[in-house]
Amino acid sequence: MDELQGKVALVTGASRGIGQAAAEALAQAGAAVVLAARDGAAAAKVAEGIAASGGKAAGFACDVANYEDVTRLIAATRERFGRLDILVNNAGVIQPIGPLWEADPKDWAKNIEINLTGAYYGVRAVLPGMLAAGGGTIINVSSGAAHRPLEGWSAYCSGKAGLAMLTRAIALETKDRGIRIFGFSPGTVDTEMQVKIRASGINPISKIPRAELQPVTRPAKAIVYLCTKAADDLIGEEASMRDDAFVKRVGM
Ligand code: NAP
Image (cartoon, rainbow, N blue to C red):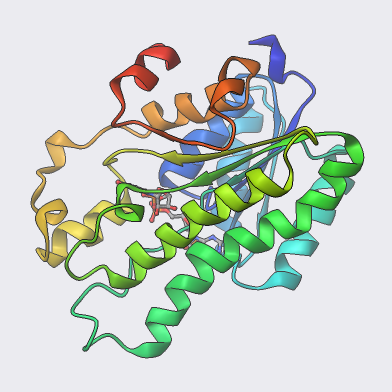
């Protein structure tokens, strides 16, 4: 896929799971990739693996809930690779899991700080440069939980619902200015987040057997697809791995 040759992508939450697979797939497609996670050593290790396979990658520590961290990360990306074309706002947490009247208010607020405010911080920090450059792609990793309440996940559902609205607000404000913004719902995917979910046993999602979960390579392939012109008609929308027509378009 030549379209991503020479492009630079930043993926948050790329030390494992969907973010790692997305970073690997973007590098495979020819983009230079910056991987970020709070555990910078883990992100750097994934980046080393990409570089060992011939890709261009660097890993950095960044807590997306800290705006200064985010602006430093974006400056480091531009310094290292000279530009920034793609932001994948993937970092996310599920906790606190449990009845909302029992959750620690600090943990509840932290979830929103990471899943919603953290994504906003990324967008806020990259957009001036993208607008000045005449364009860019932003993918906000959403969830079915953005549109469906689930027992024990009040923070997660609220944050992802807010993120889905943020995607629409960005689409409205950047209309006709070259910004390709998407929400992306990855389906139910076999990651560490699902280990925590299964351990809780709190709602129907937690009862899904591991064997029925999707491999991380599927949403990763879809994220690469959204970075290409073929997805232009979906700008401003939320693409979902639960939508058979979308999955077919991606070629799966
Ligand atoms: P995961 O395996 O738990 O990975 C989460 C990643 O986010 C890790 O790299 C983690 O690294 C990073 N992260 C967490 N908090 C962060 C913070 N404050 N700053 C920077 N990085 C942070 O989860 P996943 O399943 O791959 O989930 C990825 C995204 O997909 C999330 O947005 C999630 O809500 C969404 N999603 C997942 C599923 C699913 O079935 N797995 C379904 C729908 C949506 P550190 O802990 O080192 O920071």
